[in-house]
Length: 380
Ligand code: NZQ
Ligand code: ZN
Image 1 (spheres, protein in one colour):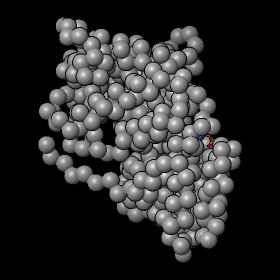
Image 2 (image 1 turned 30 degrees about the vertical axis):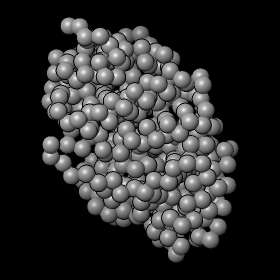
Image 3 (image 1 turned 45 degrees about the vertical axis):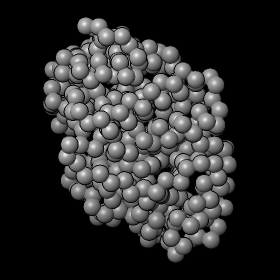
């Protein structure tokens, strides 16, 4: 085991914690509050933010869309620059928080904001930000990643930097009460795949990261089975589990895959498939294509998460159990956005991955473009 681990985001968890904004945002800051399409105005979150910031100087930018676009975020970046914003509060799901991170970093860069995700500009500094989470899924509220889409070219790319890790995050599970069922399910599935990306690789003997990953997976399995009996405890457990699934801990020092995400991002960029649903389409096929490399961890997952009996085909049974988990949530395993012959769609995805340099993905760099072609042929 060899790793450095830190997560500096202060988490304020629980009902009523939005009031913590009042003391967590510096009193002399010039604040930009950013949010999405308006869901926060229907569940009381916006009012709570306004009340908490009553003694602060602040302005707002709304309209950050799901799968946030450079085109929209550039408008907020211009405001952050012209208004000398020195603190950003993101109120929403992963898209709003990712968008806020992009604004926070790009506002301190003189060139085009897209330089952040192409690697032309390395993010080392950003306007400090805090997050009010309304949709548990991505873990963006306490991690250092952000994913942004360029609408003009259908590219979806990310960047990571400790500079954009939120200073604080408010996780108030009551904000989830207005979430449509589809978004709640997306959250469950996204968190699940986040754990899988950091767990279904090869054995390392790291009992803490493995054991914790298994607890998180078991939580998500139970929460999925109890989907119809949602109550306060259900919401609390989902919000905390999703946060822990991608806050850096279970991945510390561990081999990681992330190819499901990289391929899934292309499905979202090209056909606007919900992020989580793109993962459920790609992952089972990817696991089958990589089954020998991943067999030991799939067997471990089968035993420790699903409670499956030992057998020579335990790894295969684990993949079927993962598919059943998605199907139990009514999440499609095939891409319905592209009807009929999928060969053109496959080549479009391959071309995008090639263009973005994803030539060898996965923990062993075993997912070449040819392997990806096979994965897609079986997935789409
Ligand atoms: O825009 P509003 O009106 O707020 O509506 C949103 C949006 O339409 C709605 N919503 C959010 N909270 C709500 C609510 N509706 C009712 N009540 C509430 N409490 O839900 C819709 C989807 O929101 P979005 O933020 O797009 O969802 P999610 O949190 O799943 O974020 C997805 C984005 O995060 C990226 C994805 O690629 C995608 O762009 N990811 C970010 C990661 C990271 N930063 O670490 C990792 C992930 O793997 C992922 O790639
Ligand atoms: Zn994800």
